[in-house]
Image 1: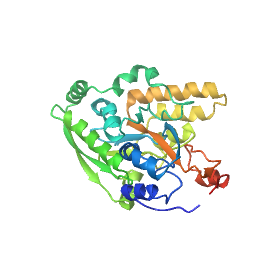
Image 2: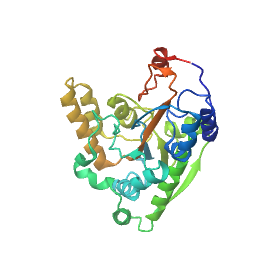
Image 3: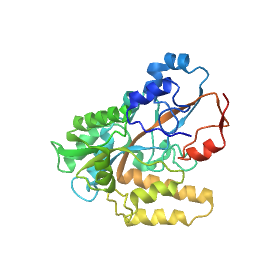
Image 4: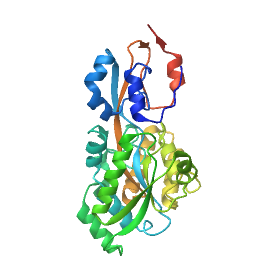
Length: 307
C-alpha cells in the first residue's frame, strides 16, 4: 500500500481518473457524489468495471456553539439555530441529494444505536426547518433583531464542506443571525478551534467512531478535551456514564435513545447531515470491501491486486 497526501479535491479526482489510485480518493475510499454525478460518464469510460457500494457516512456534520456564554447559553437561541437550518437544502445543495439526516449523536449510520428521526419525541420539533419559529425564539431571548457571531471553519480539502457552510450561514442570516465565516488554515484550526478555543460557532465534520460511547463521551462529558461545545450538564453526564454500565445491548440501546431524545431538547449541538458515501474500487482489487472505520491497513492486508 502506498498512501498519498493530496489536499486538493480536483487533483485527487484527476489522479483517480488516471488510475493512480485503486480506491476512491475520499474517505473511506469513496468518490464525492458531486464529482461522481458530474463525471459519471468519464469515470465509466476511464475506469471500466469499477466496484461500488453506497452507505451512510458515520462522519456527522454539525454546528457547534459555545454553550458556556451568551448568547448560546440560552436554550431558546440554540433551538432557534437548529430551526433556522434547512437540512434538506444542505443535502440537496452540497451533497447533490446524497445525504441522510442525523439525530443527536450517535449518527444514523450507527443504525443499531441511533434513534430513528421519527422517534425523537418532544425535541423533534426543534429539528425541523421553521424560520418563523426561529425568529420568534430569538425575540423571546432578547434578540428581536438577531445578533452577530463568528463561525470558525476549515474545509478539510472538501468542496462539499465549503458549499455546506455557505448554505448554513445563509440560513442563519435569514433569521437574523449574522454569522461571519472565519476560515482557518488546518494547523491553526486544530490547535485552536478543535480544542475549544473559539468565540461563537463552528461548522464542520466530527471524527467518526464505531462505538456510540465514543461520540457521547468526547462531545459532552465536561472533562473531555474535545467537548468544544463546553457542555456541563450533570443530568447528561449521569446518563452517559450509566449507559457504560449496561451490559445488555437492548437495554443499553434504550438508555442511548433516551440520551438522544434529551439532547434533541437541549440542542447543545445542531446536527446537519451526513453524506451517503459512494465507495469505489478497482476490479483488480480482490477480497476488499469498504467499511466505516479507519482500518485501511487491516482491510488491505487481506486483499490483493489481480493484474
